[in-house]
Image 1 (cartoon, rainbow, N blue to C red):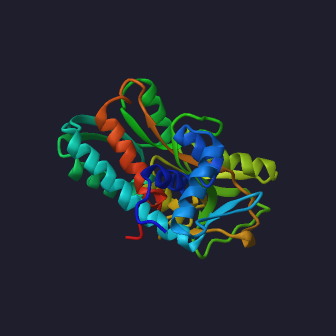
Image 2 (cartoon, rainbow, N blue to C red):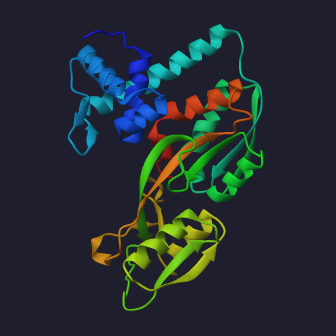
Image 3 (tube, one colour):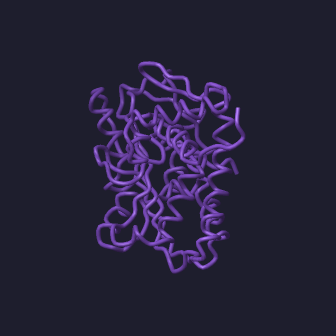
Length: 292
C-alpha cells in the first residue's frame, strides 16, 4: 500500500459514488467506461482493499470505499486550494447562482459559504426558485450557474446525484384509495407534480390537488398539516415529514436528477469552474436534507 494517491483516481471514485454508475461517472468525467474501471482497479491496488462491490446489476461502496470517499474529498479540496494558490490568480467577480428551493434546505448553503470563504473576491447574486423556472432563466442568460433538478430525458449539466422520488406524508397519514388521493403540489410547471400524476394515472388511481403552493416551505407545511401527500427526492425529505411505505399501496415514482448546469456564456470563467469543482468535490453529502 502506498500513501500517495493520484487525484485523478480519487476523482473517479468520487464520481462513481455520486452517480452510482460507472457509465454515468464516465460521462461526467468525459472518459470511457473502461477507463473508469481501470482507475478503480488501480486505486484498489494502491490501498490493497476492495473499494467498490460490483455485480451485473448494481454497485455499492464497501466499508473501505466509504472511508476512502472521505479521504478523497479532503485530498481533492487541498489539491484545488494548492493549485489556486500557486497559479497566482484567484477567481473574482459576481456569480449569478440559481438554486432550487428544496435544495436550499440541504447542506448546499454551507457549501456556498465555504466556497466564498476560500474565494473572497467572488460575490453571489442568489436566486432560489423552482427548477423549471431556473432553467428558463438560464436559457434567457439570467444565471451563470444552476443547481437543481433537470427534466427526465434532459442530459444537460453535470450529474451530482440521481435520486429516487418517494411519497411523503406524516406518521399518521392514512390514504383511502377508493377516493381521489389528495396531493400537495407545486404550481405548474413542476417536475414532481408531473411525476406524481403520471404514477397515479398508470395505477388508474384518481387524485385531486388539495393544496397548490409556490415553494418548498408551503409544500412542507401543507403535508405536515395533513392536507395531503406529496413527492420529494429521497435524500431531501425534511425531518418534519416521513417517507410513505408499502403499507400505503401507492404506485412507484420515477427518479430525478440533481445537477449542476453552467451557462455556456460563463462556463469558461474561473469563478464558475471553481464553484462547480467545489460542489462536486463536496460529494452527494451536500444534497442530503438538513437535520437542523
